[in-house]
Length: 141
Image (tube, rainbow, N blue to C red; front, side, top):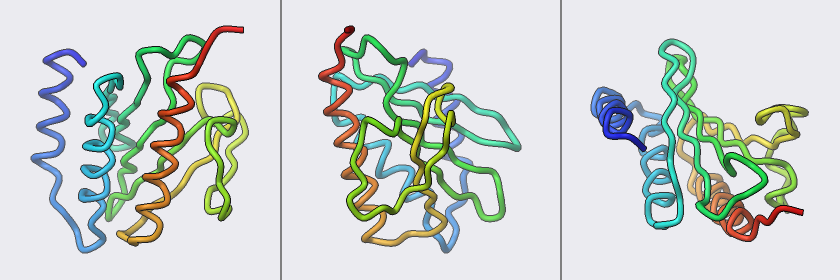
C-alpha cells in the first residue's frame, strides 16, 4: 500500500465514529488479522458515499488479484460485507450469501455483518484465515 493510500485509510479509520453496532471494531479486527501476516498485501479503495473497500491479496497468488474484500457499506449505520471467491472457503454453517459474478466477475460468497455478534465475527474471521491459506497455495495451472 502506498504511503498516500495508507494515510487515506488511517484518516478514514480516525474519522469513523463507532456506533452501538460496533462495526468499526469488526473492521479493525479483520484488518489487524490480515496485517498480522507479512505475506498479505492490502489495498484500500475509497468510494465516498458508497463503500470503502479493503482488499487482501497474498504475495504468492498467481491466478487472482485478491482473496478477500472487506467492504464498509455507507449507510446509517455503516455495516460490513466480507466477500470471498466461492471456491476459496468453506461455509459449513451456510451463513453466507451466494453472489454470482460478484467478485471481479467470479462467483463469490459474502457475509453481511450489520452489528457485532461474537459467533459471526469469529466465524467470518476463520473464513478469512482459510482464504488466506488457500491463496498462499495458489499456483498457475
